Length: 60
Image 1: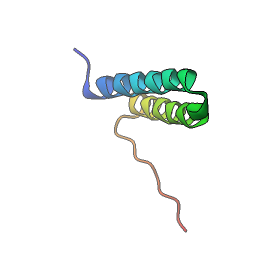
Image 2: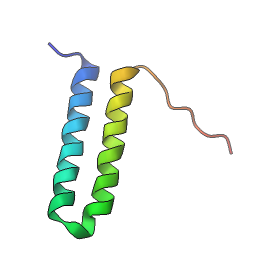
Image 3: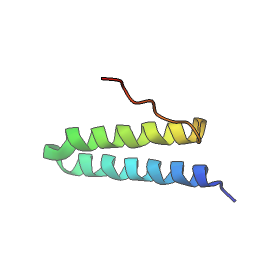
Image 4: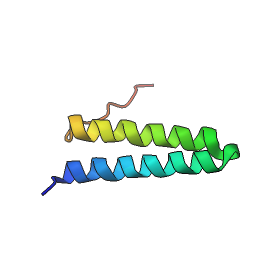
């Protein structure tokens, strides 16, 4: 049985695949959909490698 983090990573990767499919089918949306897919894949990587990690906010 998968852990919560494994399931979350799979769902994020599935969403990235969805965005890539939309990008292929809709050239006007390609750039934005590819960017969305990249973000979802990056978050999936974070969830897999450090499920309890935190993102540090930039100080302004």
